[in-house]
Structures are given as structure tokens and as C-alpha cells.
Image (spheres, rainbow, N blue to C red):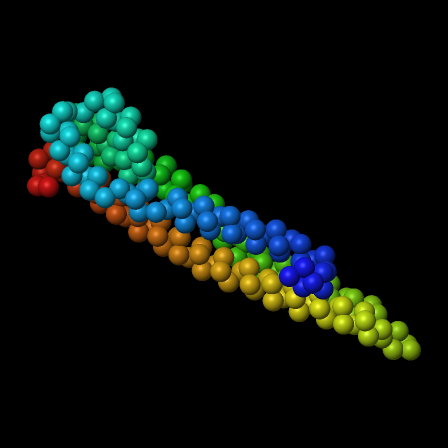
Length: 202
């Protein structure tokens, strides 16, 4: 591996840095966007049952807010339980926007890496071509310099694609997952409002 990095020359270092950042983001988002973390199973029935049995308390709201992103949305609605359903839904929408920002954290950076990695590879290719043409003299070219320039050009192009393709795949995957979770959370929150106001059965 070190031999490949050495053959690719100094333009490979920015690509290595972006690959490390991309891996870190993918690992962090994979862990943070688990279903059990974002939307615990059966949270809505448990909240409705607790509200009917014990009412809404400050301890309950605090526990909900700290529990999960879905809990934060539920807590925002429950804080306005004495208001009209419209006001509850408005509070839920505001909390939902804050939760969306949290769920989308680092995704823009991952998308940026997916976009710039091929450009960084192209930059390395250009550097390699410059070395190739720079080695040419009227008497001919130095084969070692020529080979080194070709190595820089090809390795950087390949590594740029190796970084960009998985980054784009995971960026699209996480974006779709976040969008689906946000829609599901919104539907659950609206259902909670309607149940607590007697407009709908559990």
C-alpha cells in the first residue's frame, strides 16, 4: 500500500485525507441513524398509555426529549397539549425542523467529498501529465521520469474514483433514509395529536 502511495506522488495526500473523513462520516451516520436510536419501536403507544394513566409531567417531557429524535418531536407536541390541535402540530413541525438538521448532520460534507474526489484525482492526473511533458528533451525522455509521471496520473485517477463512488452511494442511502424517517416521524406525531384530542383511535 505504501508503495502505491509513493508511486502516486504528493497529489494523493488530499485524496487520502478525504477518504479518511468520508469513512469517519459513514461510520458515524451508520451508528447514529439506527432505527432503535432515532425511532424506538412502540414509542407512540407507550406515550399515549402513559398520558392517559399519569398525565403529562415535566419529568416525562424531559425523559422524552432526551430519549430520541422522535421523543423530541412528541415532547414538543405534548408541551402544548392544552392548546388546539393546530398549535400542537405547529410546535411539532418546528421541532421536526430541528430534528431534521440533526439527522442530516455531516451529509453535506459527505456529498461534497463525493463530488470533489474525482476532481482531486483529475488534479493528480494533470500533475502526472506535467511531469511527463516536462521530462521530454530534444534528445528524448527519461524513462524513469516518464514512468513516474504515468504512475501519478493513473493512481490518482483511480483513487479519486475509489473515494467518490462509495461516498456517493452512502450519501444517497443516508439521504433517502433520513427523508423516510422524517416522514414517518411526522405521521406518528400527527397521529399522537389526533389520539390525544379524541379525533382518532389508537
